[in-house]
Each structure stands twice: as C-alpha cells, then as structure tokens.
Length: 126
Image: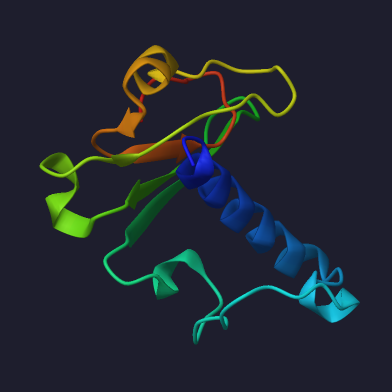
C-alpha cells in the first residue's frame, strides 16, 4: 500500500507509451482486472485527480535545440497542498535522482505536487 500511488503513476505513464507504440494491452491478452476503464482510459478519469503538462520546443542558434517538458499530477486536485496522500517510491533502473524520497520513506505520505520531467540536462527546474 505504501508504494501504491507512485506505482500507479508510473503504470499510467507506461500506458501512454503503449498507445504510442500500439502494442497489445494487458486486457487484450486476457488479463482480468477488477473494475472498468474510464471513458478516456487515462489517469484523468480518476475523480479528483488533476493533470497538467508543458512542453518546450525551441530551436537555437548553432544547430542547438531545446526539447523538454514536465507533467504535474495533483492527486487531490486543488486541495493537494492541504491533504496528503499515501505514497511510496522505487527505482526502476537505478538512474536519476529521486528528490523527496527520504520523506516519503519516513512518513509514507506524498505531500504536494508530483512533477515528472523528461530527462534533460536542466533537471531541478520542475
């Protein structure tokens, strides 16, 4: 239960990759899940969850370019800053920094927004 929210966020992220790659989904392979999918089959179908994103694409001088973005998930909508949710974390492949994991490990709560940024050399801006 402690890691459930972060695992769900990761799973929904993988689902978006599945659409891009047009691979078979678990339900298509006969794996049975309880419940039914939402209208859009997305994290935004979950009542109370707010998701926003920003993508920056800029062509610079000298054949340089900026391609980055961030996705922000508010698990309780506008009330996220006042009402924490159970949280957990894991490292999928051992790469990257997981800021805030010490607090999640100690308290078991995710407090505030959950920002997922694409890998760039300007981390920490989310």
